[in-house]
Length: 310
Image (tube, rainbow, N blue to C red; front, top):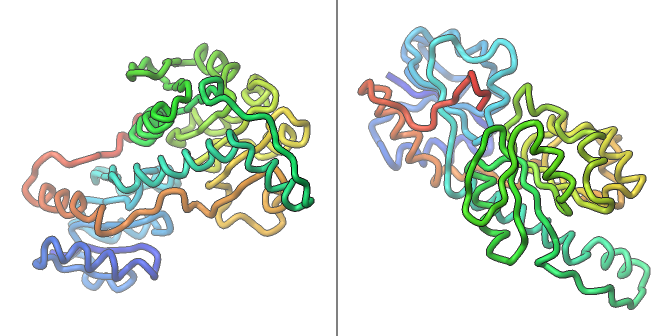
């Protein structure tokens, strides 16, 4: 039996080599060269792969998504019914996202946008020093990524709050949950960080109402999915000064078309969905483990809960 591998062309061979280094007996086929469809027992794929195409493989018993986010799996037609889908929960992905969040929190906290503007104008001006203990950080989502980011921020002395759908206790983090908790946390968030999974319930959650609840001059950091943000509402909030700046790593669509306003907005810092990038050598062990578990009929790691949406 064989494993089908489908990702960006530049990463295909790295993934193959990382999997074979752990289990040289694996037969790995690189999409689109799948060979005989009946041979495929597992598919290790990323967002561009067509879920409909996976219905060609009658003996498929496992799908592994090469990332932490799984919203792409919910696009019609979705994965073949009855086939378990696993996502990656990888320490390197988590660490990278924490670094990116920290980078941008400090960028805004230490007035980097203002100092860069002064530099462009050749103006020597010392701005009032910010106080870390007074810069309140609100994190939307306290899963693997949000919990790690919260710990990093707490370690620097920032007051950290977190919002989740259901109550979640986390040491040193003030918790908010549900419909009532969201506006309560937003009203106290000088920097709002979105690390939520994208579901029907969270799509468009960063909208005019939520942005209007933030303290005037607050900042937004979105490392989750572009669908969380209503672009027109964020641009209006930036232009009015309600939001003083935004760091965005994710967009709809991607790649972001050249004509979109974010590209040239003076108060927006962009990265091209690069905040957290899967490193094959780090992620491969859990992929190989799940392939072995699927063969043995054992419980799988990090299964996607399609009812919950992540």
